[in-house]
Length: 430
Ligand SMILES: NC(=O)c1ccc[n+]([C@@H]2O[C@H](COP(=O)([O-])OP(=O)(O)OC[C@H]3O[C@@H](n4cnc5c(N)ncnc54)[C@H](OP(=O)(O)O)[C@@H]3O)[C@@H](O)[C@H]2O)c1
Image: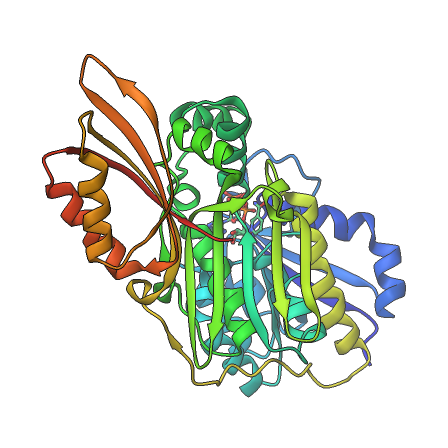
């Protein structure tokens, strides 16, 4: 039984600053919960002379990771540097030296979680990562603990605040992608380089983490099909509204016997679904379990305070364990043999928007191509006619069809001279 638990913090940016602050301000309450005080021993930064908003004591700063990794008195290391390198090496070394680790790093957990969790088990310590997916929303805990008795059939998630902010703006204000992105940047909701969010990569990491827990198998970021949101146009949102849908960047994981699908892409979802009401930077994760039924988690997926809520809970959990001298927590096994279903094999409904020549018989030609690939049409809208260009815009909603067939039909349609452009193809989730 220890009289104090010492913590080393790696990274003092948005999240690290929040963690340091909350740990200081809540020190008395946390000490009561743990049964021993938590002491911040050292803080790793890149630039010790940088002006910081947080009130961390500069004498704790170091630029040498070994001052934390090598300190025998440090029990718990909190890694909030971000990125794969050098964070991965630090986490690995920390575990190998018998330290407990808490991280918010989705990239490292998505790519190397399996290996690192095994390493932690080997060294009789734990690696906790609640903050790595969904920020302040508890997801890892529920999936790894409270929902364990369920067979999870599906996860549908809005897990990137930046893109949800942009899509909400586009839907409500009838503006195009570039204008919405510019606003998101001005408000600090999008990074200077927004590629990881906008291209769906950030959501891919988070989905890989959640799906691995839900299906108790290894899921790597490379298994997740992903598409970003930059190809969406204001007119797609107008049509969606007219058809009774909303467009969201959805992260979807579905179990089908011993295969599963994992994909992140813009998706038409019915307007009356709770997920369709999740606006702005908020996140929501819907989980379907065979016993629990449908569950919806909603909240702030990022930000200093919500993220430190998740990190500190992990720290408190570990600190209690250390102070009471109990053995490390059991963890979810991820050894189910399941295979990933390639995107070409999935079946879903589609929204297809195209520009065609404004002449009789065009729709029949398009319907024939779709028919050749066994794709049946559920509705068609044709109204925007550009008389000077003698063209019209057609929107088709299909019945469930195979992705491969749909992609082949699109290439065939592109070859028709009556088709001027296939403007967008968006999957529908009912
Ligand atoms: N921001 C969020 O809302 C949020 C939410 C959930 C999860 N996360 C995750 O939390 C992690 C941290 O994100 P953040 O937004 O706090 O990042 P950030 O503001 O960029 O902070 C990164 C911190 O790490 C330090 N650092 C960077 N490279 C380093 C290196 N090579 N050696 C030593 N220190 C280094 C920086 O030092 P200096 O201060 O000296 O530059 C900075 O203090 C990421 O994994 C992120 O995905 C973030």
